[in-house]
Image (cartoon, rainbow over all chains, first blue to last red; front, side):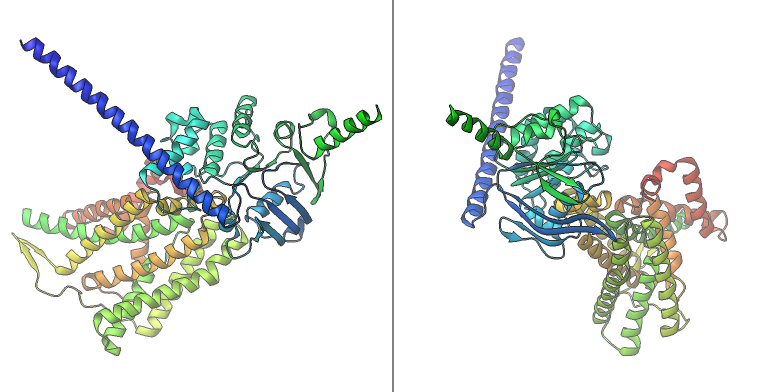
Length: 304
Length: 294
C-alpha cells in the first residue's frame, strides 16, 4: 500500500516537473519571439526613417594625426551598405587609425557619414555606436574583471539602458548559438579566458546590439590557427551580405576569403586595390576585383 | 564592564561608518576613472564650513544652507573636472593614477588654505538635522547624530552596491574603469560617467561632513585625516567595492575603539596604518586593483 502511494506520488512529481519544464521552455520561447518582434519593429522603424538594416559609410577627406605624426592622410572612402572590405597594409601605416576614426575613438578631421548622417559632436564614439557601427577593437578591449555575460550585455548599451529579463536571454542565447563554447563560461571573468575565447566574447559584444556594420581590427592577432578559423567561420555565418563588414588585418589571407573588396593603407595613404602578393589571395565570387575578372571572360566569349 | 564595552563598540561602529563612507566615496570615483581622490575629506570639511557659515553668519535656514553648500561643492567639483581632470585625461594615460593623485593632493591643500582664510581656525559644526534628545537603550546612550550617520552609511553604500550590481548603467560605470576603449566602443561616454561620479562623490562627501559634524566638529585641518582613513578603508576593498569599504571601515573603527578603550588611547590613529601595513605585507592580493592599475 505504502509502496503504491510512493510510486503514485513519484509519478505526480515527475509529471509536475515535466510540466514546469515545458512551461519554462514555452515562456523562454515566447520571450524570445517577443524580443525578435521588438527588434523587427525597431528595424521597421529604422527603415521608415530611411535607414537601412545594413549601414553605408562614407569618408571625405578624413585625416587622423597624433601630435605632429600624420597617421591617415585625406582619406576618401565609400563603403556601401552590405559591402565587405578588407583593409590591408603593413603595421604602423594607419589601418587601425582609419577604423578607429570611423568608430569615433580618435579625433579626425574631415567628414564621416553613416547612412548619410554626419558623425560629429562631443562623443563621436557613442554616436557611431548608436548609428549601428560596432567596432571589435585591436586586442579586444574587453572588461577583464567583469563576467562574460556582463561584457556581452554591455554591447546593447548604445541602444537601451534597461534590459528586461527576456531581452537578456535573447542576447545571450544568440551569442551562445554562434559560439557554443562560451555557453558554460558566461559567469567566468572575461580576463580569465583564452585569447580565442576573448575574441569570441568581443565579437559577441559587438553583435549584441544587432549592428548594421561590424568593424574588426586585427581579429586574428595573437590567436592560435584553430581559433582564427573558428572566428572567421562565425563571421562568415553572421555576415552574408546582411551587414556591412570591414576587417583590418596585417596578414589578410583569411580576411580576403570573406571580403569582396580590398583597400590598402600605406604610410597613411588609403588606396583601392591590393598590395599583397597575388598568390596569397583567392579571387572572391563577386565584387570589384571579381567583376574585372568576369569582364575579361566576357570579352573572350565575344571574341569567339 | 559590559556597559563600557557596549558603549565602546557602538562608538567604534559610528567611527567605522564614517571611515567606510569616505572609503566608499573614494571607491566610487576610483572604480569609474582610476582617480584616487585623497581630497575627499577636505571636500567634506569645506562643505561643512560653508554650511556652518551660511546657517550661522548669513542666517539661512539649515536645509537651505545645506542645499546651497552642496550646490556650491558640486559646481566646484564640476569646474575641477573641466579645468584639470579632463585635461590630464586628454594628455594620455601614462602615469594617470599618480598624476591625478598629486592633483587631488593639491586640491586638499588648497581647500585647507581656503577654509583657514575664509572661516578661521576655530571649530565649526552644523546643528544635527534630526533634533531631539538622546536615545537610551539599557545603559547605552545613542545620540541622534550617530543614528543619522549609520542610516546615511547604509543608504549610500547599499543603494550604490545595488545600482552597480543590477543595472546596465551601473555595469557601464564599472566598465569605464576597466577598459576605456571597450567602453567607448559600446557607446558609453566615460568622461560623462567620470564627471558624474566626481560631482556626485564630492556632494555626497559634503553631505557626510554636515551629518557627522555634530559628532566631531571640523577645523580647517581635520579633513585630511578623514580622507586618509577613507583611503585605508577603501584599500581593503581594492578601492572598487563601496560596500566592502564600508564593512572594512566598520571593522577598523571597532578595532580602534577596543584598542583605545582597553590598551592605550594614544596610538589609535597609528593603528589604522599599522593594520594597512600588515595587510600589504601579508595579503597583498586584497589590494588587487591598486597593484594592477597603478
